[in-house]
Amino acid sequence: MPSTPPEINSPLLQKRIDELSLITEAEPPVVTRVLFSDSDLRGRQFVRNLCEEAGLAVRVDEAGNMFARWEGSAPDAPAVATGSHIDAIPNAGKFDGVVGVLGALSAIEALQESGFRPMRSIEIVVFTAEEPTRFGIGCLGSRMLAASIPLGKVRGLRDPDGLTFDELRARAGLRGALESVALPKGFYSAFIELHIEQGPLLEQENLPIGIVQAIAGPSAYRVRIKGEGGHAGAVLMPGRHDASLAAAEFALAVEKGALASGSPDTVATTGKWEIFPNAINSVPCDAVLEIDLRDTCLETRERALMLAREASVEIAARRGVTITWDEINADPPADGDPRTIEIAEDVALQIDLASRRMVSRAYHDSLFMARVCPTTMIFIPCFKGYSHRPEEYSDPAHVAQGARVLAGTLARLSHQPL
Ligand code: HGY
Ligand code: MN
Ligand code: MN
Image (cartoon, rainbow, N blue to C red):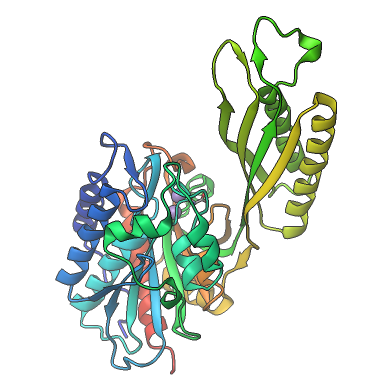
């Protein structure tokens, strides 16, 4: 066991983060790497090559989750897992998810160079489809690993071009049974994910490390509003059933529901709007909205949802439109594992890094890994909390410190008694 966690090769880690950021569908420095797109496939290959150069044994499951294993002296014991995602939403930055994948690789390389030998194997997981961009639902890979999504629902997904998950994963040469993806019970002894905070607290409090004690529960809904179209000049106002204006009122009602839930942790937005026929001189007859509603507490999230549903009934009656709801996902919050949290805190303390426990308001693959093994996350600060935008930034010192705390935590978890 290393007396203190080994130093991270920060310039090399930064160089890799920069190199991966150039594998994008957008113009650098903008990062866009949508599930199973050409840039996603090239990004996966980039990470795979680095892991194989580090001597890790790499495999890919039928959903596209990639695993890079550093075999320990007890190869049959439940391994310690770490990792994150490299897919990126449109107009994203270069740190979200990537820090947890490349930081984990740098942590393992530092441990290797320090002469540390794992007892439990240590495995990096690069989860497929953490972002909801392609299919509207996030964490598809970790949901399937945790057997937390009916495979019929996965097969029924369609992307905006009408492509299925099976058609898209075939691009990566994956055609095997998705039933093989779910992890056997007890496969991992622990999971720990390094990630940028995607919020402003650590920077505001000038703290280098956050340890996640809870992850907010995400939910998403697709709401269809059916009105009546017509000529924008000829249909007089009293006779209109304008789907777009009903959508506008409804989106404000969603916001109102979140504000009236009784908890400051309830957040909601209407992030996707499609108006039909979307022509300037035509009264919109249809609107399709996608709502993102989250909370650290199920009860207040449900209250916000109920208020929004009640508002939709009133808006539909008053405006003479129909409003129908489809649930995309509604997942409970997850708690960090106390023992794993303590270990990560103790490692940070050991290298004089102040830390605080905190909530993750973004969801992560950890939300589902917490269903299969003790899980927590290590957060590092990011500039003004920016994320999901090109200005996303974490300075190299913070990235390296996060990876170093990860290295120390992985070392201790790997030597947990069998
Ligand atoms: O939306 C989220 O919380 C995550 O970044 N996909
Ligand atoms: Mn993200
Ligand atoms: Mn992420």
